[in-house]
Length: 243
Image 1 (cartoon, rainbow, N blue to C red):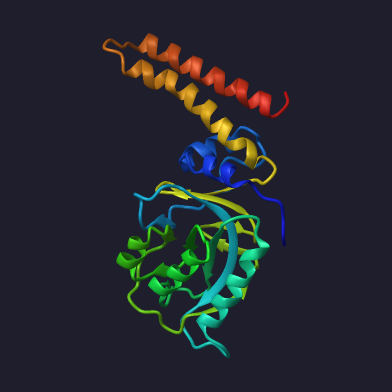
Image 2 (image 1 turned 120 degrees about the vertical axis):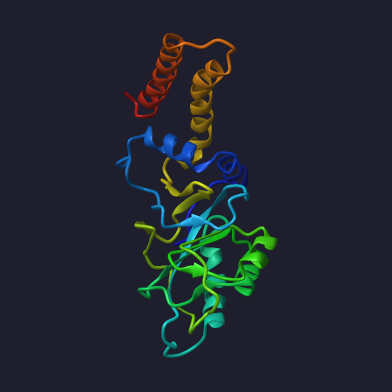
């Protein structure tokens, strides 16, 4: 699964922008329907104050309702860590909790401390987490459906398989961007161009925002600013799509 990824500078450039701006940029290429490619509202940032998370999906499935047939969760974490080298950049650990309803927390302080120490950028689970105060102190971004106090019979079932989290199918190695607003994928073929497009979108939107900062405003002036913004973004989209 080894692949060519973005440079550290390109990943840092993506992390300068929030996920809504990234989604707006990706839309302009018209590579997928506008209602696809991002997780639904069930997946929320536990620590909204942290900066955007950017990295490559290290996917796993998880259960905690019943004991594993063999092994334990920490042995499986070792296998995950060994798989980090197959990714082209910092991993984002993505868990699909297979128990329905969720039986116990997917992660805690020890797991997140381990992942961060080995270079992970964050963690996402369709289940829940615990030790949130300690994980927050690590400055480690986590995205969950909520919190639960116990770990149950937590164990990792499989690693590097497609998973579904927040209504979105994530494949091993997918490029992810997440913040307070949610989590989105970024198609690999356009990823290197997205930061520059985000900047152009911000400049276009500034036409409206700057107008609204004027001492005197009226509907006509607003409509003119909105039209100029829309025209710039439409022209940007045509250019990206080669039309």
